Image 1 (cartoon, rainbow, N blue to C red):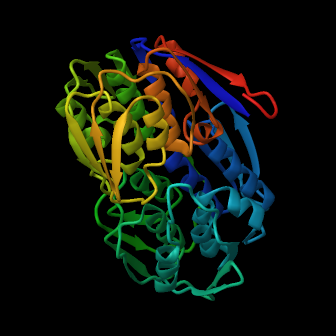
Image 2: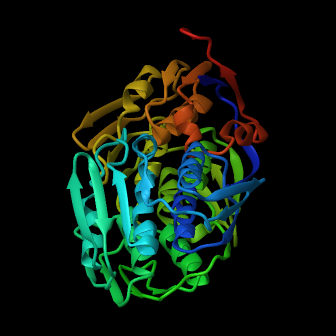
Length: 421
């Protein structure tokens, strides 16, 4: 077990490079299963979730070599279309494997994926999509089994634009006989990145980034080489860290238009934003309260709601944040309150009365994004804070403390002694 010790009230200044996107890498790793051979993926971040996916792929027969941030995935000897229960429980994103395994082997068996601290994420949209393109799906005894003599393609209409279900449907439909149309598809940039690598492999997919995606099935896919897109959630987190510490930071290796909903709100709060071709510079002035509602892309991302809540806790006036995507996304509020924040939660809405400053405290990260929010709060707080359970943060941020140290932050990672602090 490890924790961060953070001394607050240090302005962040300098340049920081954003890593490859976790939420793009995981489905891309899954997509390599659609064909036999060696695919090469660049800018793969070192994260706990990536390691978990690597373990699953290895267990079903893939050979994986990591050379720095490049990953070589050899799927020649993948033969199993069944994912062991203990690995499914470790990581929700393992549900991405249903589509590619069904596409390649025409059958797949998985247990229900692991729970998630931020609330239930129903798998029914994934199942419905696979059924629409020709699979028979059986759910019993905690397992989901899907098979198809032939995937035919079909019309998939989502009740809600689910990112994971959209990506699973794209991967399975890539090797179907006919044409698949996905309506009310999720529009996140990570879906466009998945379309890019699938098309490099020989798929015929168009429309990613819009609410209608067309997949003309092909008979065969071949391995390819691809560089993962940059992580817009990490980028947004660093922009907010700069604003919280009244800093001056240039966030590099990003696609600024992916962050318009975020930079727009940061300007409303009182930050100065300068946008370049592949960077955003942020200088924070006097912070003022704002109202925010999380929405599917291109709306304000649910993954940045927690860091934003930390930021507005020290903004003048009252802010209201409404979470429309996940129901348990305010688990960090109790921890922020220990640091002096004034927050009242009513259902899916948080009302935040800004305070002049937060004070250091001992807190624990309840989940990935809440963990990053507590680190941000600690950077701005008076005195010293300890953030425990940082393994949650390691699921989605590569070397966050080293990147923050390079911007001047006083943050160190230390081992927690057995049975104590």
